[in-house]
Length: 505
Image (cartoon, rainbow, N blue to C red; front, side, top):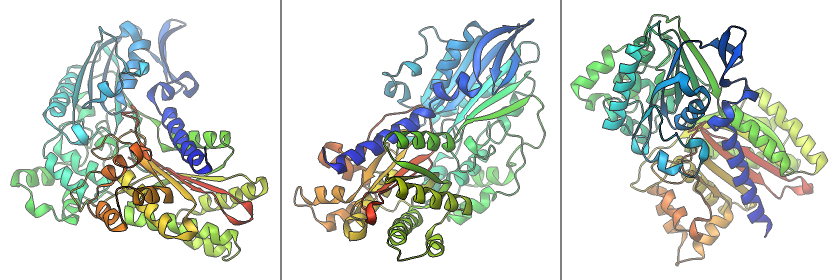
């Protein structure tokens, strides 16, 4: 196997290990201070949540969840809580159970107490998701102090599976390049359970415990899945009207939706004392796992950011600036101060990168840069794709055309296993991708440009080398945004540099 194939395989394996680290069964583990197996401690029967003991003696637990990660979480709780779990409702993406048939930790028991709704195909809300949301709210309102101790709410990219009105508005916002923060902010006004309204419905329960897997840069609780159990009033975020005007959508809305978006408060204002929120997984967990796997592959890892975001045009430009800057720095063409001007992230991460570069040069090992975030893409064409595959294809073209970047390898994939409305998680990028394309079926650069202009990256990769460069995982049962890996394999003076950049979903 040649060196290029090995590099690409290594990048794929790093991605898989990073995803594995943020699967529910690993996040909700004893090593992470979670133990839902009831244990007799003195006179009390307790479980452990984030290191804190909770007494569930003579109490009944109800579990609700919405999003891509909740199925695995529900399976874990079903096995550990046993008879203490009396009911549950899950709203998951359509096809999620079928995709996870081969995964033992994603299979509910045959006599499960869970009612499972599969809807929101391709991350777009539908009637099934709406029905699930209504039933979740009904359950919440039925809870009382006498018989409820715990209500676990698993929120992981759950904005579509929560169900709401006005789904076409969200689809159009997404196509015009709105960020996940902006999408979820608008969603709060179009749902009966977002913006803290789910928490308000369960205000009579003994306790509401939310276990959250974050898929948004910075882990803002009020925006993750549009904050169904958040009572925080958020003034710093743009209003729904401001966001829709920014993308030229406000004037075209139906009058009833405009009224709803204008009159609905962003979040409930009262504090609910029985509320307990825990972020159990985010991109920092995944990037940490990527570092460990990089060491196994004899790379020298470094985290350069956990907040990568912006339009793909900007991200492509930033990555190319970093790559060229590293080549120039290694060749003593520019100084560290000049390289810093090309580095788009904060001072602390730049300092760590310089230290890592020195270590990498001393040891003669490839350098692995790790980052996390979630970019956006403006859809202009009628093709099929997602931001990860499009990013890989754009960079592949640049690597092919720029001799200095000819030996750079790249991977971009979503940790949820889904890139746009496709069955791919993402793709890899390198000059070999373009060369292989040109070597078959009389293809040329003009046809390549058509794929890019039509946002048809999925079909580009699907039709190339039996999908060799496409990443197919199926639903992973988790989501902490996207991962990107950049590998520089030919820096002068034998300083091989491997960059890994984790972006968010």
